[in-house]
Image (cartoon, rainbow over all chains, first blue to last red; front, top):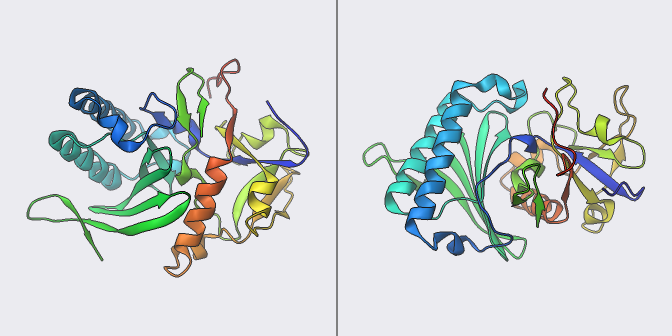
Length: 149
Length: 123
């Protein structure tokens, strides 16, 4: 472990990191090598979020995901599992009651951070730069998260 | 970047952990390696042991960010990156800049605690 004097350490709540990917630097589409693999990963993600929902005291108060945000994230995970979407590399409580899904690729990263009931921020990076961002809002008619705002 | 978790699984340091939260109104909180111990830096103000990511100071300063010492009684090495504050993160005009800083710090980071041979104790 490095503790060089010219380094800083940053403390975060990453203890709650839920690594559900198994490869280093795999592009997001590499996670879709097998529909059943992604389906299993989405299933695991749902199971973990349900466990967070039923046991919120495992988190520090500042890190506890809000129930309505967890419900939105779980709904999204179920929808993506059903349509065969690529599973995220990480799901994590991101503070302020929020939950983030992160897809890490070799040169691109996508983050969906659930911020409220039926709402999420979407950000896509390429080579460290933001190339797309937007607000996802759940359409009450078809229940799908759609770009809006 | 990916690092070994306590269970030996490789995973990246989450970008979302570098994005300012509500309690980062004066900037993103960090601890300075040369001053703070791993134990102090990985323990929250409320006494809960937490995961710790480590990045070189140059990863911040090379991007024009500053590191301001804000020692506390609990953590004499506490500091903030004032440019990465909660208001800037919520301002549509500056959010993407903060996002890109968070991405850069994430890429420059490795997990400092827990490491594979130093599993997290029961808290």
